[in-house]
Length: 277
Image (cartoon, rainbow, N blue to C red):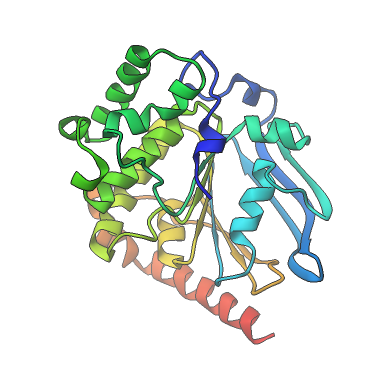
């Protein structure tokens, strides 16, 4: 799935989070949600809440329904049981209006420069080329890509491409970010660097974020809270608060600290238990 459909209609007011988020401290809620594809049950009795500005990381094995859960939250599909609300609204179309999706693949258009890829959602919403490019240029500079805004995707590294895709997601101006394994396509060293960058950017943005990953360490490092899902049908088997973050330059020390290591052990233990049952 590409991200354009969720980013194609940001409001003309810009890249600020949606004002519809102000009513409640809970930005996203799912209550006893279930989902099936015909006879195949993908999710069962999933309940989660994400506060405004909170990052909730969802980790679990392949096929457990993690990506499906993001699709349900975004209103791209409907649960077969339970209820989902984003900023207090439950209708699928209204949930869609409040979410911006970043898929596993960057989905950059090869014939567009980085700045034009980042500005794509703004252009599709009717904003003029000059204004859209100016907004995208400002954000790309903030994300460390100022020197590369005129480059084509083929001229960018995997990490740079992911930053352009993330800029496109932010420029959608939605209050809820749905990140579906955004670093799955990059190598381990680049992935670690991008984790540091993303955590700092999410703090600065203050958006509510739901992040799907297979990587327990990534979930604990990026999330304020971590949910572990069981194998299909996915159920929440562990819900924990991540360790307090250290300064960005101390990532290695953080992931090797006793508290972090213990939480990682417990998360993997709970996941292993769920896979045995």
